[in-house]
Amino acid sequence: MPQKTAFITGISGQDGSYLAELLLEKGYRVVGLVRRSTHFHHENIGHLVGKVTLEHGDLMDASTIEDILAKHRPDEVYNLAAQSVPADSWAQPIVTAEITGVGPLRILEALRKLKLPARFYQATSREIFGGAPQEVVDESTPFLANNPYGVAKLYAHLMMMTYRQSYDMFACGGILFNHESPRRSLHFVTRKVTMAAACIALGIKDPPLNELGEPLVQGGKVRLGNLDAGRDWGYAAEYVEAMWRMLQQREPRDYIIATNTYYTNRDLCQVAFARLGLDWREHVESDPRLMRPTEIAAARGDYSKAKAELGWQPRTQFRELIEMMVDEDMRRLS
Image 1 (tube, helix red, strand yellow):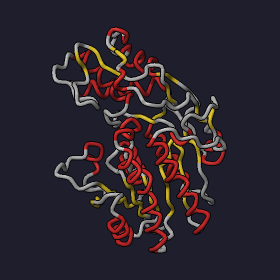
Image 2 (cartoon, one colour):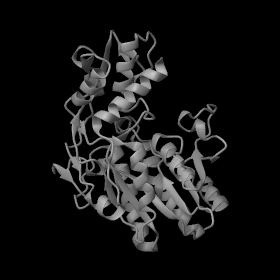
Image 3 (cartoon, rainbow, N blue to C red):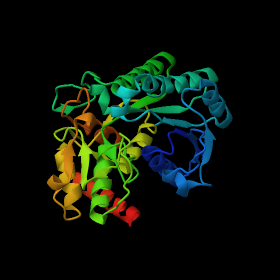
């Protein structure tokens, strides 16, 4: 079999780095898109230098995207790039729309114009369901996005479906619920909590900054938003396996990837701090400045379709995942 080429946007992110590792193990030639910057260090893919080909570009630049696709003519395209922080989307709704919403359309349109038969994966988000009242969400649940990030993701998802139906493209969307790992950035609550717990346990005097530009830990405390908000959390390294499996099917379909479990931010804090022998209640405060204008509904993701058709199911439990992240942050800070 000839070697396949995969093109990954967002390769330097959490999901992109895990996916690149997976595809390299499977014998793919991997090309990744990164934004040009004076900062050349990409922590998540530093160990892949020399193993992947990096191209510089931006999802807002249609001509560059088309040039890269024409140059490498990939067999599979994975669009993982996005302005990926729902909380930030309120402050940057237009940028979020351009990158997260219209960015995938630029890739689809380039594939159409070039007549490339590449299979296309769109990283869709649980946020497209927004405030859906169902306790358990599946692929038939109506879309009800309720923040700029979710709306942008929904636009991209619907355009992906439109190109699939209109141009007979092999395009599918992975509707991924929250998925975390030690490679998650500090913009996300899981990593904020595990890093803060490690900083407090080790007495770090100069902790990293939070999304407000303030020290993550102040006076022995970390500030979070709504402690009662919760999510269906899984392990990112397992979720990228589902992405790959979607593009190996006979027909393109969309799948929910989740764990069908639900934990609150309080649960997250309890597990993370307990791992280090600390009482989270002594170190966590709720800060109104970090509250979302709207909160997504409490819901679990039903992954039964993915289990039946892709042979995929989650393996890592919530506690195991959070403890893994705490341990890695302790190792880094030590």
